[in-house]
Amino acid sequence: SRRPSASDPDFRTMRVSLIAAVAVNGVIGKDNDLIWTLRDDMAFFKTTTKGHHVIMGRKNWESIPERFRPLPGRPNIVLSRDAAFSADGAVCMTSLEAALDVARKAGEDEAFIIGGAQIYRLAMESGVVDTMYLTHVEREYEGDTFFPEFAEADWKAQPLFRHVADERNEAPFTVQRYDRLPDAEGA
Image (cartoon, rainbow, N blue to C red; front, side, top):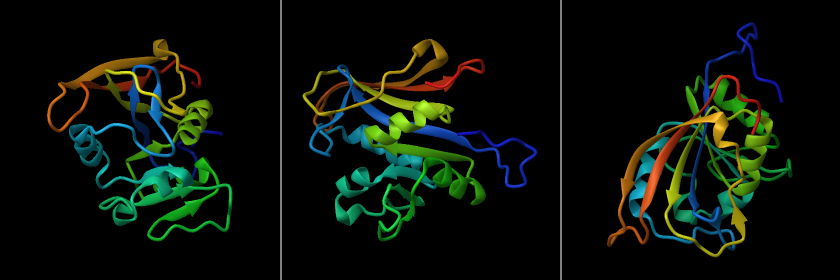
């Protein structure tokens, strides 16, 4: 996948960000669902992505309770290999590049890749991710879905905030922003 250049007629400067919550052991889900209750992390997700295009895989779309689909206040783009797939209230695309083009052509300044694991892996391997917002859940969980490994040396990490476990959040967590270093190649 190529990055657009300033000489492209449809070029728009757009940050491609990825946002995820990851347990200590790399788990991000189980049975196509979240496995923790972290209301303050969910609030961070909502505030951070509000007003921006969100790109997700079909399974992730289907895991969102119907009453919350499409995610309100942001254009939803769903990736599916099946060109006939449709998702009420969302734009459906068959490639990550096409999804990013939709956001770019709409004048988006920061599009968010919101999962699941296959889409995270695809984005990381294609080298399109500029920034990651990772919630590090400070506990191990059993699950069947994992966040892809990445070379931390290729990223500049900046802690944003830490939250303790309380009645709204079952585990403590730290949210960090990772910006790709200029000389980093791919994932």
